[in-house]
Each structure stands twice: as C-alpha cells, then as structure tokens.
Amino acid sequence: MATILCVLYDDPVSGYPTTYARDGLPQLERYPGGQTLPTPSAIDFTPGELLGSVSGELGLRSFLEGHGHTLIVTSDKEGPDSEFERRLPEADVVISQPFWPAYLTAERIAKAPNLKLALTAGIGSDHVDLDAAIEHGVTVAEVTYCNSISVAEHVVMMILSLVRNYLPSHRWVLDDGWNIADCVERAYDVEGMDIGTVAAGRIGLAVLRRLAPFDVRLHYTDRHRLPAEVERELNLTYHPDARSMVPHCDVVTINAPLHHETRNLFDDDLLATMRRGAYLINTARGLIVDRDAIVRALESGQLAGYAGDVWYPQPAPADHPWRTMPHHGMTPHISGSTLSAQARYAAGTREILESFFAGSPIRDEYLIVDGGRLAGTGAHSYSAKG
Ligand code: NDP
Image 1 (cartoon, protein in one colour):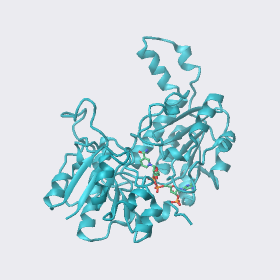
Image 2 (spheres, rainbow, N blue to C red):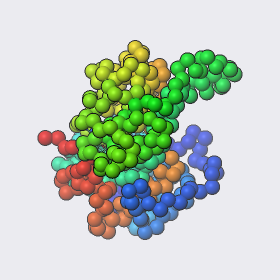
Image 3 (cartoon, rainbow, N blue to C red):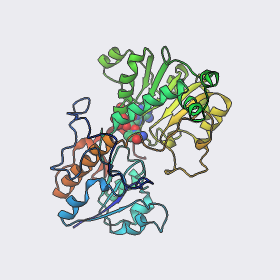
Image 4 (tube, rainbow, N blue to C red):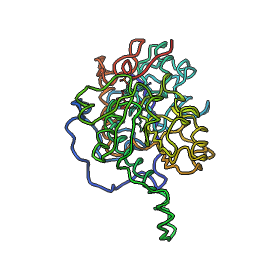
C-alpha cells in the first residue's frame, strides 16, 4: 500500500466554506483542440467545491483510503522541520499544486527513496527538479490543459486592467473619491495596440484567440510555428524569438514554461529593447523575469505596468519588492485555481493515480518525465540539462 503526501494551500481565513456564490459549474465537453477532459472512474466531490485547500483534499481521501493507501495532507512545506520534509522519506507519491508548490529539489528527491510519482495538480512542474527526477527514475505528471483557459482569461483581464488603469480607479471609489482625472491620466484603449505572446501553446494560443476581437495586431514567438491556417485566421506575425518580438509590442504576455531556455529571459537588457511604456503580463513563472529589473523598469517608466500571479518563492515574503512597486496589478498565484479549474485538476489527479496504481500507462499528454527521460508533453515543452 502506498503513502501519498499531498501539499495544498491553507483553507480560507474565514474557515472552509459551507456555501458557494454559485450553484454548480457549466458543463464542458472537451478542451479546445479536442483533448478529452479527465476521465477518472468516479469522483467523490461536487464540482464547484473548494478542493485545492487542505480541507478540500482534492476530493481524494475516500478513494485512496478505500484502496488501503495512506493520505497525508499538509500546507506545511518549508524547511527541514516542515511536515512535508518530515514525511517525505515515507512517500511513494507527492502531490503538489504550483500555487503552493512543494519544491522537490534534488536534495529532497535524494531523501525520498520510495518516491515513484511527483504529481502536479495543475500545470507546470518546474517546482520539481526534472533532472533529479530523471536521474532517480521518478515519474513526473501534470494535468495538462486543466487550467489553460482559466489562465488565458486571467491574462486578458490583466491586460485590460493595466491598460485601462482599472485598479487605481477602483481604489478611488473605495476611498470615497470621484477623481476622474487621477483615474484617466494613465488610461488607454487596447484597440490598435500590438500585443505579443512569448509561447503560443495551450495558454498562449487561447490568449491570442481571446484578444483577436479587440482589433489589435497580434504577434507571437514559439519554438514551433503554429499551422499556417491559424496564423492566417488570427492575422499573426511570427518572430523567431522574444528578442526580435518585444520591440514591436505595446503589450507582452509570457506563456512559456520555466526551463533552462526561459529562466531570467526578461532581464534589464531585454526590457530596455521594449517600447517605452509597454505593459508586461506574466502568468507563467516568476523566475522567467529578473525580479529587480522589473522594479527598475516600472520606476523608470520603461514599463507602464506589470501584472501577473507568479512569484518566486511562493508564497512571496512580506518584503517582496513586487508588493510595493509602482503600477503593478499582481495577485497571489490564483489564475489556474478557480473553482472551475479545481474540479478539472482534482479529477485529473485521480485519473493519474488510478492509472499509476493499476500499473497502466498514464496518458501521454499528462507526462513530463517517465522512464528516466522527458516524456509526453514534457518532451515537447521542456528541456533537460546537458
Ligand atoms: P503548453 O505546453 O501548451 O505550451 C507551452 C509552450 O511554450 C509550447 O508551445 C512551447 O513550445 C513553448 N516554449 C517552450 N520554451 C519556449 C521558449 N524558449 N521560447 C518560446 N516558446 C517556448 O503549456 P500551457 O500553455 O498550458 O502552459 C504554459 C505555462 O504556463 C506552464 O508551463 C506554466 O508554467 C504556466 N501556467 C501557469 C498557471 C497559473 O496558474 N498561473 C497555470 C497553468 C500554467 P513548443 O512546445 O512549441 O516547443
């Protein structure tokens, strides 16, 4: 029987909810492009419930305990005295969400002799040292597509909120003001702007599709070019890399995974090549940008705004400079953890566990590392060292 160590974010400060703002969720048939939604044999939760926090347990307890497994759920993940680190040596499976990542470093993987599966309840497995997973024969899997559209919607929201100066204007209302000029002195229309995405995978392409009706000029860069009919349909301009794309953009959105090629991509040098007053949206990973270079660019006016939901480390410390830098629209890491997304990634987590325990193959599109090498989606979107 297996021990499953599951690291989830804390319950709401007001306690685990007993009622919800809406009754149920819309029914989706398929993801865009045709991939099927998760297909576990059953689920033990009601879609629309809070599943990603400690008391939600991703809806897994009765399934796992019913099969004789041990489920440990904790939010305590930092440092050698954390419950995560203390229980790691007995874990066969570690489940973690990118929003509250249990960093599986090479040192931690070395301390987990039983570990066979690192499962991301979400998308983005960069909190796992993939090279160490490859070396130790640990399978890494994630619930591909579960929250891609959730993030794409968040990106569009953040572009509009920055360009139109929404958050400072809302602040004036909370402060009993009616300060039109203060609100509009930094407000523009998105119409006519050049908007580019670094990566046009599931999220990046969904962002492009959602922006097309705004009558903007769309740009993208990616390691693989999109089909010619998609480029034509959305009137896309392709650039071979970020460096050649960003000087042509008023808004840049980052939608690439964090790996060797993208770490620290947006440094002082690249930011300096952007149009003065450009906006940068990063919902991909905090380490794709240079933290302090972003602060400098906002302070100098090189960037007119920065928004996103990804930081490093997570949770961000109270003194993280992005909390207080000017003209930002940051949230905690939430875009991929709507109640809608949680229902999909909880079901996908169960599907992966069912395959794992049955000894049957995990869907190829869920795999990042398997059999000592990058596999499935991981082989397409990530790169290994060396
Ligand atoms: P996909 O795998 O569908 O797309 C990733 C794309 O990035 C691929 O098209 C890949 O190219 C491209 N890419 C990889 N390296 C580079 C590079 N160096 N330059 C340009 N493009 C590159 O993933 P998703 O769209 O679903 O997710 C993207 C990322 O978004 C995730 O890895 C994760 O980090 C983040 N994310 C954030 C969430 C949040 O809550 N904020 C939730 C979900 C994801 P190709 O495959 O063509 O080689």
